[in-house]
Amino acid sequence: MNRKLKLWLPYLLGRLGVAGAAGLLLSAAAAGLDFLVLQPQVEANREMLSEWQTLKRQARAAQAAARRPDALQGLAPAAMVPEAVARLFAAADSAGLLLAQGEYRQASEKGNGLTQYHISLSLTGSYPTLQAFLSEAMQQEPGLALDSLRFSRESVEASELDAQLQFTLYLREGA
Picture 1 (cartoon, rainbow, N blue to C red):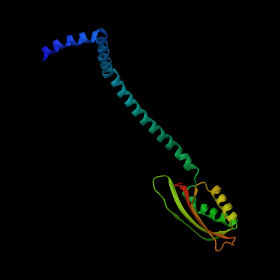
Picture 2: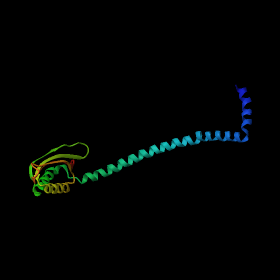
Picture 3: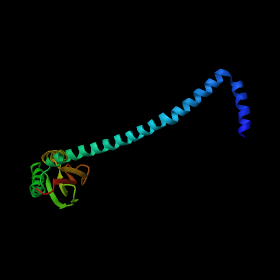
Picture 4: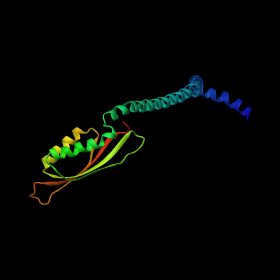
C-alpha cells in the first residue's frame, strides 16, 4: 500500500501543478490552524460566556435582595393589623357606606417577611361613594391590595349598589 502511495503522490502533484499544490498546502494549513488555534479559542469563549451569565444572575439576585428590605419597610408592622382594619372600616363609614358585614383572617406564609390578612367587606352605597372609598382605602394603606369586587343591585332603577369586596393586607412580620 505504501508503495502505491509513493507512485500516486508524484502523479497527483504533477496533475495539480504549482498552483494546485499551493492551494492544497494552504488548505491543510487552514485546517491545522482551525484545529490547533481557533477551536480552543471558541471553547474558551463559551466558558467565559457561561461564567458571565452566572455572574449576571448572581448580581440580579443580589440587587433584588438589597431592594427587598426597603420595600418591606413601607409596610406597617403586623402588630398594627387592628388599627389598619379599623382605618378601613372608618373610611367606609366616612364615605357614607353601610357596612353590612366585615371580617378578616390571617393567611400568612412564613419565611418571606410578610404577614397577609384577607379582608372581606359587604357594603351598600352609591357607585361614586364606593369609588371614593376604594380610592381613600388604597391611599391610606400601602400594603392593601384589592383582590376582587362584585356589584349587584336589586333593580335597574335602584341607586344603591351592594358590593362585595375582597382585599389582602400585607404587613411586615415581627416588629
